[in-house]
Image 1 (tube, rainbow over the protein chains, first blue to last red):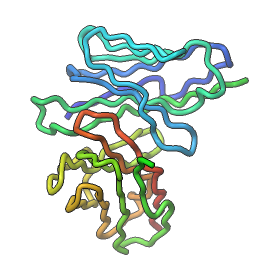
Image 2: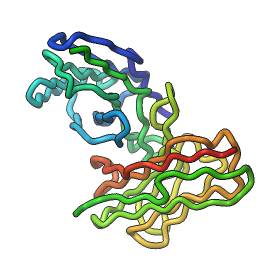
Image 3: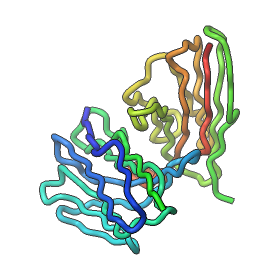
Image 4: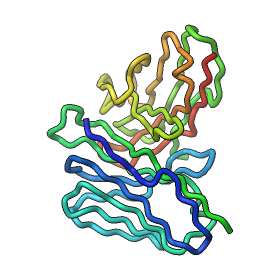
Length: 115
Length: 112
């Protein structure tokens, strides 16, 4: 099945610094989703990217999907303490795959923001 | 309120004692799935269901069973729990396959 590698595993930043997490796959992804999990909470959907080269923004968050649809990134500008949590990417198994319907998550990036 | 509920939220049990974690959604979603979350491993899918009476294995199905007899419910069954199944479990649903996942609050299971 497909695998999605996410780096870094941890990121510590000072409030106001930028943050980026990356997801990579050896296979072409049909789409990619991003989730945020606050400490002690459950994952919450942020966004879905479908098109090659797609870029979407949500306030200070910028999401990109690579031209080859094998990688994606989430960038946060000027982090705030409210950004603390774990960020996950997730990719659906494509229609040609043997496990159509399966959703694979990256390992997640734990973001700590120091005030 | 649209939501996914799981019960129990916390459970401590002993090896070999069968248990069921319930999951229910009130959003008429077709797709439901179970995940386990372990430090450093992210979320790993256990089983998923594209619709009623249709279930498929995820990445880590060993030791688990599921059923989807009704659209709203998707229980996770551990016939003979073992300590390596100690984990945080999440149920999730989406309107359709490929959609955004709505997660339940999680069930923290400890098997001694």
